[in-house]
Image (cartoon, rainbow, N blue to C red; front, side, top):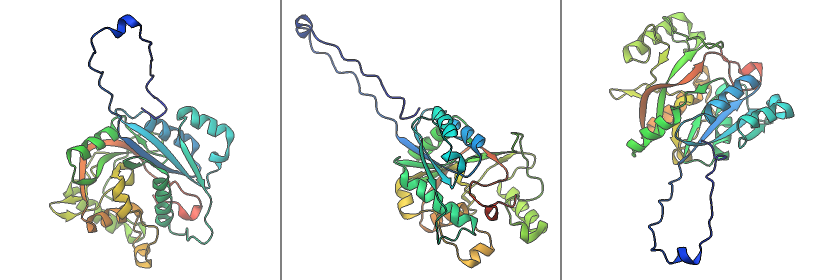
Amino acid sequence: MTEASGTAITTTSHTDARAEEPARAPSPTPVPQTLVSVVTLTHDRPRALLRCVRSVAGQEGVRTEHIVVGDACPALDDEGFMAELRASRPDIVVHNHPRAPGFDTAYLSSRLGRMRNIGISLSRGAFVAQLDDDNAYRPPHLRTLVDALERSPDAGVAHSWRRLVTDDGKEFVPVGEDPWWPVLEGRAARSESYDRLVRLGVFVPGSPVVRDTFKVDDELVARLDTNELLVRREIHDTVPFREEFSRARQRMQWTEDFTFAIDLARAGIDVVCTRQATVDYTMGGCSTNGEELRNTI
């Protein structure tokens, strides 16, 4: 359900005879659903973006708004595509962000952090979620996250698990290597990370589901992908996405979502998990402009 789908109000006139009838108890007023804001980053994947937008519009049991932040995205300047996009989501909010002069875009996570914060600043919901343009929510995704936070009022963030897929929709199963471990550190390091994550239960051999986790037995794992997150708005006031990374963190290829998880831990924010794989996560690519920003997987 979107904000565009309102409730019709019918008015009736009262005759003198009806005015003599005993007063009736008023009908209960429907309680408005809490608004969930979804922020999507995009550069030049219009077909994928349409699927992404439709997956948000198709969420069950929640009221949503969708904010699309383009990184100098040519499709968002195309009237034909925009008409198609608004046919899928008439109330969509679109901000096509130009390349910012003087902003160092050479590090991918800096650019992503900047764009995510722009999207959050444009949103109005009590909860904020992220969905990159090549990924999609399954219909119950946001409802299960809202339920998790309502059951845990002291928690500031909820997350799901994700199911890995390829560009053509087939399941992707990690085998023997952590596909997100920096390539420059070599296959041995990627294999060591994979083995550790199997021990922690994040990877299950033969399964396309990544069971991301914040902590295991008080050990900080900090596996929180942005596409899985639902964050209470007030948390972002104190823990925004990082826009600047030290040279050391750049050498270690720290991502904006990993850094966000670290910052949550340092701020003492409780995190809960739905333990449901409600995100279809496409392997490869990124949602920003410029070949220097492409992922290595």
